[in-house]
Image (cartoon, each protein chain N blue to C red):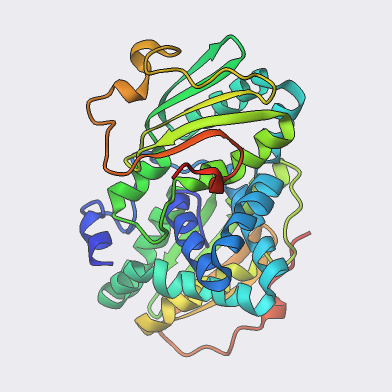
Length: 172
Length: 182
């Protein structure tokens, strides 16, 4: 992970940077297929563990930034993140004790729909499992409401009620 | 959310996660079933329907979209790609990301089964430094892989002074990652 941090673009809130400004949307097909494959082969619990491991391991440099920089770092990260995702329509607002992200157009769901791909029903749960795994070690908690193309994501310094998975809208 | 901007990073990370869950066989299944079987159905349709023309259409679009440094060459009964700057491996090198033993195998992991089903075989080498070459021929076409410069001239990646690395992986008339030559 130290190598990773050393290789990040100076000044970028993103821990892994590319020569392109925006990613290639067709990779969203692979995300959808990957989640479905893991659930089919290893089960739902393993899929949750995969998402949590992604959050705590692959995205560990982000957690380090959030722990050091607090909500400002959280807001900076998500602004940079969505700027690099093609087709995202998102607002990121930093408040006194939380960062609120309003996803008006989820770029993944939009692209999968535009290309008539069958979206894994529980696709939007990944946002909770990954984000919570990133947030918790930084002293934050992540909660998601909505889904299926539009949602609200909150990253709070306050203890919030546990995530109700059923409040995350299934994709159709 | 997991994004597409750093896709190659978490994609590569996923290979190693899967290997730890279910070994080499699970990684191979992932490339064949999830990537070839579901993610890349747009490529499959083009190549199954149109053969070489479909390859040209698919890789022309995809490699441009990924900002790759490459050249595609169409010869008599062969479609060749010389990849000089793989955007995918390049991203991993730039960011110092190495979890899985051979990231480059993922390409033949999904392209191999696709070519098998479309009636083609692959000659291929990758040098683990973001450079590789591919030649696709009909299975019944017995011609051997071209020697350096034969098909793509000066654009042949093997003519680069930095092509030779300590570990070049080679495939001959292959359709599967385990067809790698010893």
